[in-house]
Amino acid sequence: MGESIGGPRDHLANERTQLAWLRTGANVMVVGLAVARFGDAGEVTTASLVAGGLLVVVGALGVGYGTLRYRRTAAELRVGTAAAASSSAGPAVAAGVLVVAVAVAVLVLLLGA
Image (cartoon, rainbow, N blue to C red; front, top):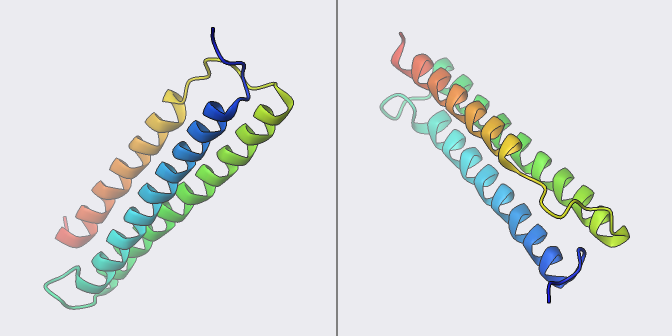
């Protein structure tokens, strides 16, 4: 009844996951650019540049990680060594913690606490 590991559904699911990483990373980078440009009432300040730069770097790391994860999983699917029920909770939690930590740092920079 079930489809074997490495079938079309698995490859498509891998692509959807990679696109989600790309979309999220790109959105974080766009927010970083907006913060850098409009961070302090429309004025570009050192704090807004640093805060925006942090967000751009985190977004780029997300794009890079998503691409590496996609390639590794695609290779495992091709040779049939991918785990049937591998969990993505660890990387998702780590990414969430990183984004929240950077968001707090950005707020501290921009609000001058």
